[in-house]
Structures are given as structure tokens and as C-alpha cells.
Image (cartoon, rainbow, N blue to C red; front, side, top):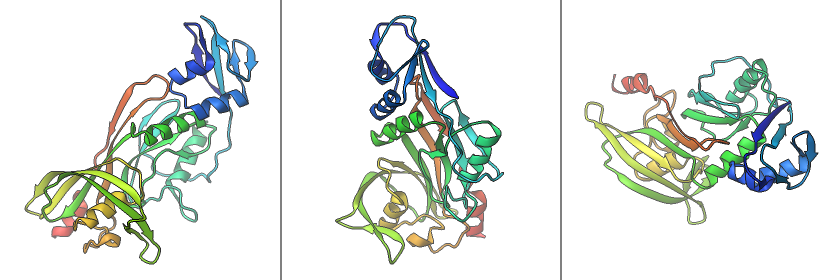
Length: 284
């Protein structure tokens, strides 16, 4: 069984100590219910900790909850609580009935003796590539979900659109799912999706524009639907109006920023989009 271990250097209650060390209120509630150890004594409530006490929070072993499949897994970052992978396009995250990223993660967890469920902190569409975080225990999962809810978890995307678009603007729209069209559309009854779009570069030889998308909310398809609403669908995104038929659409989660669980260190991770061969297919 794994555990999170602390050496106490001040007089403080367990609850206050855990709050100061990035545990969510929900996680603290679970810790009190499941029990933790102060020195060698099990405790199930808030407790007055003293200097030099050992605080040990057990992490129960879990059964991996996806079938294992060996496959290419590009790990960008890993610590005791999370890993971040660079997901390839054409790979679903965890859809049933087909091999998915979750199956590759299950294999990796198995061979590396990580006895935990597959917890996906953020998600990407099948044909969106890029950075995706996976939690190794329920406490880190709760922490990073809380960061996302409070917009402390920053996610930036690179999109390629046809034509010249000069934009440096926050776009706010309400989106609702159209069951018949199988896509998200503007609706006064929809959920608010907020994205900051900024032009990075225009390539006149190809007549395409590279767009940075900084999402402020985590709504499904919000970048794709927002750009389509502006009249500039992402290249290859036929669902949202692109006339280019590609193997994928050109959207990549290239950067994430977060405050690391436990020690509070700021982490910035990046990955390359590698859109070259798809752009060559458009102009040739």
C-alpha cells in the first residue's frame, strides 16, 4: 500500500495542515472517514498535531479498471501523483468497444506496479492531439479537478484555420448540443463557453492562420464550435464546416500550466503539434 508521508514542524490541526498542503475539503473528509496515522496510531477525526509527529495518509490499492493493451504512450511528465501524456490523434480517450488511451494507461500502470484506477483529469476529442493529465490516486484527482474549477489549471491549444483571421479577443458564447446534427451550436439556453483567441501567424503561401486558444471554461467542443461560429472552422473539422477532408482536424493541446499537488510548485509543460504532413496534403 502506498502512502503520503509528512513530518510535522509546528503545532497545528490535521485539517488545517492538509488544507495548507493543497488537499481539497472533499479529500480531507474522505481521509477522516477512512482513517490516517499519527506516528503509529490510527485516527479518524481532526487531531492536534505536534512538532516532530509523523502524519501518514494511506492510499488504498485499487484494481485497474480498464483492460490492458500494449501501445505507444508518450509520457511528458510523471511524479508520484500524476502523469501527463502527449495523446496522438485518432486515439479515443476511453470509449468502449475500441482500443483507447485508457487501455494503454492500464498496461503502463500494470507493468509499473501502479495499483490505481485510471483517472482522467482532462479529456481530449479523439482527433485532438496533445497534453492530457492522469491522476494516480483520488487525492490528486480531487486536487486537480478543484484547480480546473477555479481556473488555476491553464490549458492552451493550437488551431489551424483556412484564410486570414486577425483576432486578439475573448469570445463568450452559449452552446447546446444538437442531437440531430451531432454537434454543439449557439443557443440562448446553452452553457457558457469562454475562450481567448489570438492570432499567432498567417501563412500567405498556404492561406492559413495559426490561432492560439486559451480556454477559460471546459465545455465540450468549445474551441471547434467557437471558431466555426466566427466563420473559420478548424482545418479538417468537417463536422463544424471545414471543406478539407483530412485524417484529423488540426487542433492540438500544446501547453498546460498547473500548481503541483503537495509542494505547490508551478509546472509548465509543452508539446509540438507536428501538423506538417497534413498541411502539405492541403496544398499539394
